[in-house]
Amino acid sequence: MKKRPILMSVLCILSIASSASPDTTTTLKSWQLASMQFTESLEREAQAAIQRGIRFLIAHQNEQGHWSNEDFPALTAFPLWALMRGGWERDHDSAS
Image 1 (cartoon, rainbow, N blue to C red):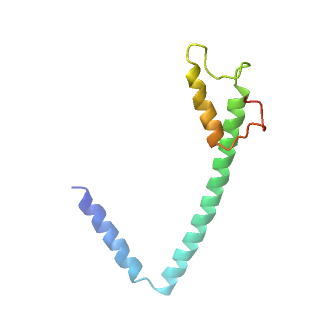
Image 2: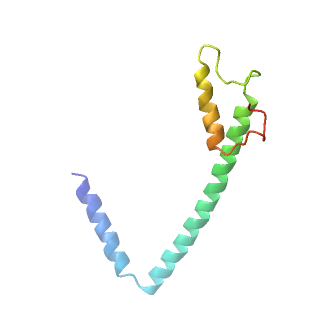
Image 3: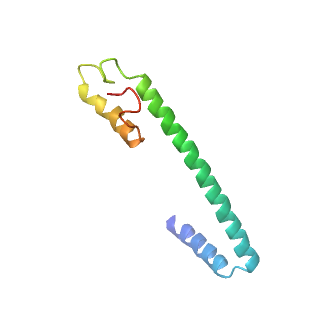
C-alpha cells in the first residue's frame, strides 16, 4: 500500500526533470558537482577511519601474535581479515 505514494513521487520527479528548463539543468549540474565534492570528502574520512582502525588493531595485538584467548584461537581471523581488507601490509607494522 505504501508503494503507490512512492511511485507517484517518482513519476512527478521524472516529469519535472524531463521538462526542465536550462536554468534547472544548470542547477542540477551544480548539485552533481557538490555531490562529487561530498563523495571525495566522505572518501577521505572513510580512509582516515580505516587507518585508525588498523592502528587500533595493531596496538591491541597480543605479544604472541593473536587477538583472542587460547580457548578461541580462530577469532584472530577477524582482526586479520580487517587488516587485510583495510590495506595493511605485513612489512608495514608489527602484526605477524
